[in-house]
Image 1: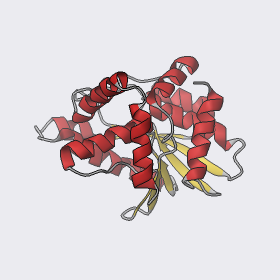
Image 2 (image 1 turned 90 degrees about the vertical axis):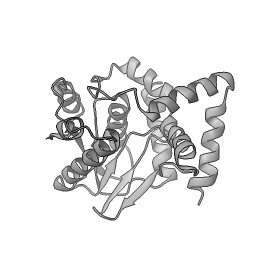
Image 3 (image 1 turned 180 degrees about the vertical axis):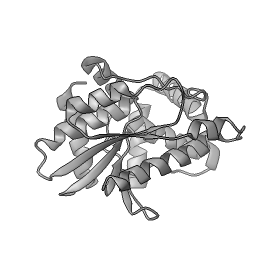
Image 4 (image 1 turned 60 degrees about the horizontal axis):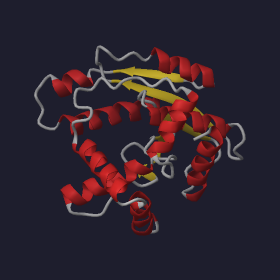
Length: 234
């Protein structure tokens, strides 16, 4: 996927779901993964010609793992001329040092709390997550399998407790396209140091979805169409 296609997908989602308004200040969470780096790249390049003016701040929540090195993220943000903020925490020690039964859930809660506070401290009214089309489908399957309901992310969510609005501009982009973009543009992806990476229920569902799509070509497109019809049309 080239940059023109990335921007086209992103702009379409922004306009379809009214994700960005004039004078928005948006905090983009960048973890070092391909998805968040592609999102920051897309929003920065869109910012240059989009009719509604908005500002960007990139924020990384450092969970406290020893082998996490954010220097490449700082350099990437500098190259895009986007202000970068690194929030240091002890979340890794809290989550994995006390034998919690559900470390992923606790980690997500603490990480989001730290990110939201950093966004507010930076004067932002909106926060942007890099969930792509596959993430929406996988979340729907997780909800079906483990909660017995048909539900997934929303492209736009108002968070009452903080007053922030969460947006997900990559909703239309398949993960395979983001991988192609990463390889083409050599995004500085940082390895995930989390010991639970690849061992979660989401990882299982991702593998299952890949098998389903291989055996039934086009199943991802049909599942996403079902999500759009039932969730976002309401």
